[in-house]
Length: 447
Image 1 (cartoon, rainbow, N blue to C red):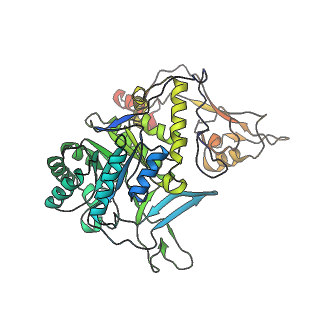
Image 2: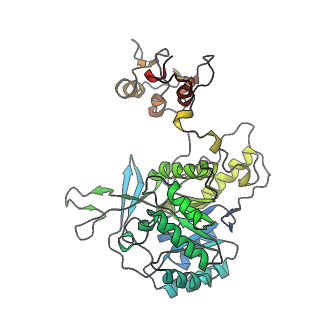
Image 3: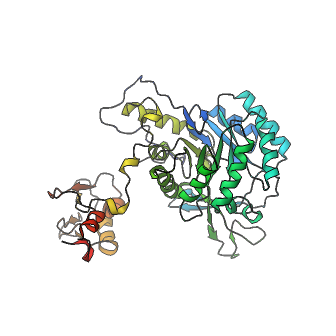
């Protein structure tokens, strides 16, 4: 099992993974990273948003252990609405998914710049990145030069916001137009003498398109994903979308634990693309050290967190750094670069997977509690490979018919009760693409 929920509701790892050979106490671990020329003492950055709105927040976060922060997006100050947030709760867990219609900073630019300079002066070893969003070439020149004077370590161009700002020709309106994204990135590179990251919107068909535009524009790296355009729920009494503003609602940005699989897919897409060569700052659903590790294993150079900090407070970073450190010690790693991207070679498109590989389910009768959830799931939702023998509540796998889909193991409430066991068939690896190449892919690929 990956992670868990302690009594206070905060997501946690299990204090370190179970690794063969046991821990290696005393081995030094270095969590420092570099992303696009921006260095930080650990990979955990606060993402641009409400937690990075003021100097007091960012300094408190650094004191808690965060390695970096991306300041809430600077630009022409806006007027926000009330209310602003909505959430999906699932099976007793609050904020499984989070939605917001909040925009960029509502504070004067001069105040933000003064506070950024103060934070960087007091915390010179931490990564401090300024998120920017303006319109014209002249606007970009002005804000970049004024912000760079604060001593910040880099810029993040916000081309991802899916609400409010895109209606003004900014945010995802830029991120969805690769030619425009490339042009504005080029402006930023022309005006800036420090690293430039480009924050990408997931509200697009293929994330590689805007990522390549950022690369052509000269970006030092990309950040992804920004929030997903969404309507999170409807109030069944007032019929207003949530969050409600005077009885009306709109689409907002979706984030939180529920978006992690989407974010991980998009980070993986860039990691597997040979033509894409920029470092990635990963964002999206990172709540535990296991989540963080997944992104690092798929090639991310740094990690940005927002919703988890809003939900549990800044102290959550201590659980994430501790868990990552312990995993590294147990695996024998001293630096993140030693394992970053290690999972990428094991990711393939469906057409390259081995069609001759087979696994079947096995049920441990000692651990089984007789709930028969596996039977109901397989009988109604999968392949009818489980039987209910007379005289016992312990189901039986019909292994000759089992297709190895994993559904029974997924729904089983007892850890370790159902395992998936490989069946040796004595056949060589053969993929769908192999069959296409051999001319044997007709009739479902059967020989």
